[in-house]
Length: 413
Image (cartoon, rainbow, N blue to C red):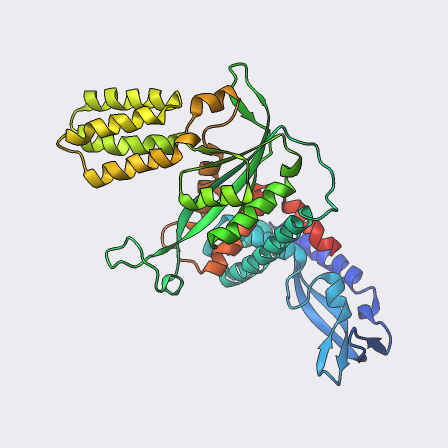
């Protein structure tokens, strides 16, 4: 640790000489603004900048516009330190720690691992700022994907869009007026709508679909279904949906998912996640045969085979036959029958498998846990919508393997 401290000290000295070798970024006595005003050189002003090597004093030429009563230092823009006392390298480290760890622990990690001393609140603030920038980066890329200037990519035979939602705990003001499942009837969570896009090129020897390695990208936020619909559509377009041989949408049966599929992915094959579909006949099984394990296993095994064979109509008839049993709940039965009726064309699993398609959204289920659950749903956490969306944007960027692209984009901007 002493050697590291010494090397950082040497590095700080060298870095200080490098960043101050330009005479403070002096650009003459006056600088013209875009509005046609003149910024007049006033003096040199130092800023203490926290870098990955420690604090460095940066000499900057300061200019002032007497008409607008505003001033700025051109060097701040060059070094990407406008409005902050942290270098881009430190902000990168702070935001990545904030994306993975609770802020209260993240600032300790930075101190222990990198000898960077910042508070938990500063880690939170920087993480939210960089998260907003990451979201803007994603939005810019998505917008470009809709233009005529798309860079050609290798077309994928099949491209999938999987959609789901998961609740995250939020502060009270974010649920004002929203109904929930709590005893007081108030909601305590907001739903993060999460989507992933991945491609498929091949199947294994048994004809089962194989997801292309490292092809999964994520996008999500706490937002309305129509806004999220445009988000997932743009991500699919960025990934080359326009050139794909076949487009498949997988969801759990929620109405908002199929509305998005109809509006944004017209003509795509729609599939209800098989494992979610199974949960619905299990609800009936537990109510009717919960005390008889043998009968429970026998009944659910028959339904499993029927569903695997792509025959939801047989499952519907089996549920109807349960209506005379003691544990049968009429409201539940009607609800589950309605579920299978509405989604039966999305449950032709035997046909989907023959076509070499995925029939489950396991990738997104894992994504909900990885992208959202592991970071935003820990004990005692309560988020603002803005804060949660910033962290979701960071984690989507990192877990989609776009972290380096984001920072390269910032450096080039």
